[in-house]
Length: 230
Image (tube, rainbow, N blue to C red; front, side, top):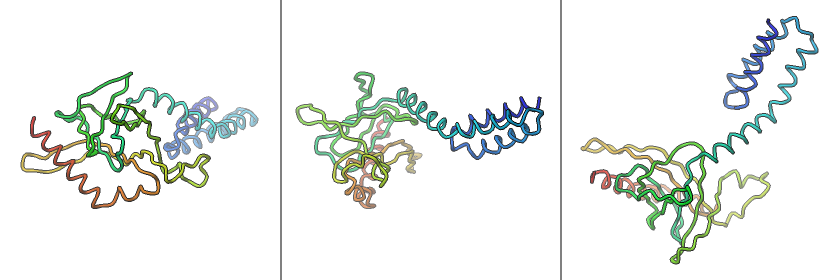
């Protein structure tokens, strides 16, 4: 009976530990399972096979878990196409759930978010959290679209296999969240996401305080006007 309990706890702990963020819970549980199994009447060889096999399998299994979850998550995530003016550079903000915002347009099962020249899109749709399935484009006056490559800091680490050119323009996820602006009418809440179109070597300037503050104030003003209309 002890052997079955120990093996059961070890298996549960192994599954928990596939998510490394849960190691703090999974490792103590794994140790408890090992202790119970070692105190059982099973042969030592059988005990070691159970313990060592799961320890050896943990690392490749963790990577397989993330691959499967990432594949499923991306496939089922909200699908967004963000379309920018041809010469747009800098920070853009998408504010969701805006009653007077851009209508939801879906083409080939993907929501089309058309960013205006000022970089601030008030959008009627809801930007869902979780996995991201986005595409990014620039569009010219003739309606021709050119895809913008996605960029992230890890792509520029020294050990990156395909390190991009730091002068090549791409799009970066800059952040997002929920903001509350107090005012005499009870305050205004809004949810947003930020993106930056920039090369790596010019990225820092778009986060300068003065520039960011001006864009934030303009966004607050447009959101307030929109919400006060309804």
